[in-house]
Length: 635
Ligand code: FUL
Picture 1 (tube, helix red, strand yellow):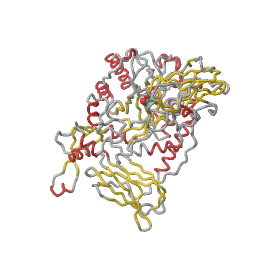
Picture 2 (cartoon, rainbow, N blue to C red):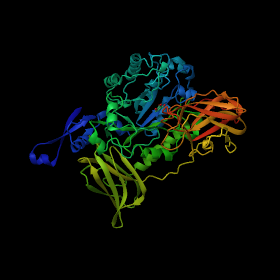
Picture 3 (cartoon, helix red, strand yellow):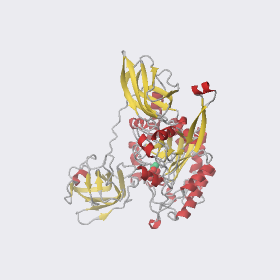
Picture 4 (cartoon, rainbow, N blue to C red):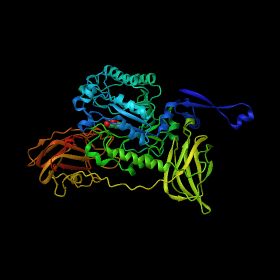
C-alpha cells in the first residue's frame, strides 16, 4: 500500500499557521482490523488512481483492432490449426486504420498481436506460427511495427492484446514451460515497439492439449510489464483496468472505481471474493455496505469493450450490420457517461483496410460528439468546488438555450466521493426536477427531455467526506432514430416448418420470432421438417434474448437428411465461440450445399456445462445463386 501525504490549503491552516495534510492511498488500501464502517468510508474516499490509471481514464475513448488469422477464415475463435499461408491481406495499410481512428476521436489503438489461435502478427522468435510463415510481404512483414509507426505518425497511443490462451502452442497447459514462452512473447512486444500504454490480457482460457489446465504466473507477467513498460496499464487479467462484465457496451449506472472487487490475477482474489459474495458482473462493487464488509479496496476502474459489428473479427456478411449511429451514441453515454473508458473494436477486413462502412460510421460518431459536447450552455460550469453531503450550487444557463444532457465530473486525482446527486432547473419562477444520479467519478452524463431553463442547481445529496467537483456542463444532444438493423435469421420462409419429433414448445425455436424461445432441461436435438426440399448451405442460431443466458449452446453438431431417417453430419466448426460473452446470432456456412428437407441441431455443450438448452431461433441459410467466396466460411 502506497500512502501519499498531499498538502491541502484549508482555511484551518490559515488560522493555525500550519498546513493540514490529507492522506491518500494510491491504487490499493488495506483497512486496519478494527476500523469502523465510518473510518472505512473515509479511507475509501481517499483511494486514488496511479498516474498511469489517471492518464488512461482521461483518454475516455480508445480503439480495439481485432485482426489476424480469423479475418481470413471467417471464424471468431481459431483453433490453432490454421495454416499461416491463409494470412495474406492484399492492401494492408495501417495508416488508413489510424487515420480513421484519429478522425473518429480515438486516443489509442490496441492490436490483437496474438488471439486465441496463437498466430502472431509480429515475427516472433518464439514460434513459427506467425506472419513470418505467411506470404504477406514475402514473410518479411511485421504488422505490430507497421501499426506502431502509423500511431506515431498520427499521434495516438499504442497498446497490445496478447491472448494468454493459446490453442496453437504445444506447451500450453505445461504450466512452467508455457509461462516462460508467454513471457518471452510479451518481452519481445514490450522491448521492440517503443512505448506501450495498455496491455490487454483476455480472461478466456480453455483446456490445453490432453485436457491440461494452464496455471498462469501472473505475478511474473505483471512484474515484466512494470519493469519494461512502466507507463502501461494492465487490463482484464491485470490490476489497473477492470472488465465491465459484458461485451454489449453497457456500463453500470453506479460505477465505483474504488472497488472491493479484487483483481482476478491475485492469488488471494478468490478467497476475498467469496468472503464478500462479490463477483465481476455484480451490480454493486463499491457501495457503503460492501466497503463496510471489505478488508481491502482497489482503484480498479472499468473499461467497456464492445465491437462496432456483431463479431470481434471482420466478416463480410456483417458489412450491413455495423452498429447504427444511434446505437453507438447510446453506448457512449452508457460507457464514458457511466464513469468508464470505452474500448470500441473496429476490425480491419481481408484487404487489410478498415471497411468503408465502418470508416463512415466513425466519422458520423465523432461529428455527433463534437457537435454535442462542443457547445456548453452553462456559464462558469468549469469552476471547481468542494461539496459535503447536502451542498448545493447554482449555475446560470445561456439565454434561450434548449438542453437535454447534463455532465458532471469529479477530480478523481483526489478520489471518488459522490454517492448521490440531484439536478433541478429554474424557469418561470420555480424549480423543478430534471435528473438524478448516484456515482459520478471521472465523468457522468445524464440525458433528459428537452428543457429550457434560466439556471440549474446541483445538489450533492450524499458524498463520502468532501467531494471535489471538477466540472458540470449542459448540452443539447440531437435526437437520433435507430435505423432498422433487424437481422434476417433465415433465407427461406419458416411458415411451413414443423417439429419432426413432437417436442412440445420446440416450435418457439422456429417461429421466426427471436423473442420467444425453446427451453429444455436436456441436451436434446431440435429436429425440423421444412416441408419441402431446400438447397441448404448453412444455418443460424440465435440465443434467447434477455440477460439470462442459461441453456445457450456452446458446442453443437448439425445434421441434414432427405427423409428424416438417414442423417449426414455437416462440416461446421461445431462451436459458437465466445457466445457466452457476446450472445449475438451466429451464422454458420458449410462451404458446400445439400438438397434436403430435414435438419437437426444437436447441442453438445452448454456455455456453463449445464444439461439444458435454450434456443431463441434457428434459421436456414439457403443457396441463392452461388455463394460468394467470403461467404463460404464458418463464423
Ligand atoms: C473475448 C475474446 O474471447 C474475444 O474473442 C475478444 O477478443 C474479446 C475482446 O474478448 O473474451
